[in-house]
Length: 249
Image 1 (spheres, rainbow, N blue to C red):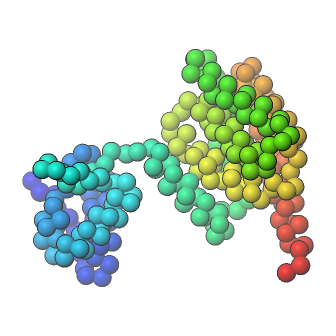
Image 2 (cartoon, helix red, strand yellow; image 1 turned 90 degrees about the horizontal axis):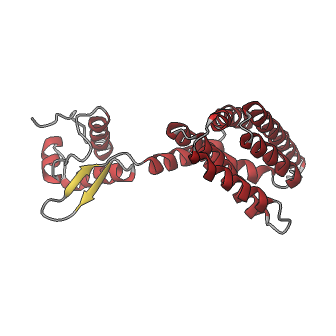
Image 3 (spheres, helix red, strand yellow; image 1 turned 180 degrees about the vertical axis):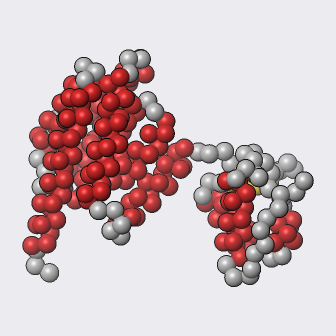
């Protein structure tokens, strides 16, 4: 039985068609790997031109909701969820929200502390071999950060990788997805704001405490080290913004 779609009006038809198809995908009327009707069939159903349908399909492809396949059995198919693409989209949206002021520094610090604390507790409770690689990655980044010749950009990149490994150590797929916005979006923004006023040795000290606590499976010490790191970062945020406000316009 053909899937029924809501009718659309001519204004922003491509967007409305994309929204209608997206709704059909989200509520399960269109299944993963199911082939969509052809452009001609969709044009007839929605009573629009094929270029309008093509534009709607481009929107869905940009959101990784559909994929195209060529050949006799080709067409447009509902795509299976790609965690990496979804996480990247979340990080991009988060970065934009910070840029326009929808997410403030206090919100950033609070969210980071709460979510990363969960990662610390989960990592400290794990005893399986899968924990070995993330902890080794954290050790490597800590050693790299102690290199005085490291540039600010390289230090910031290492900082992101250190916390990315911490998230991986938690071993929770959904938490990894949610933390992508924190580690890949908020942390680089934070580093960009505070790199001139922070002390590398302080960051290294917090990282060393955090790693040692996880190696000892001490969740309380790990969350304490993280709390001190976030508090230090929050203070440096405020200091950096105060210095910026003092500059002559």
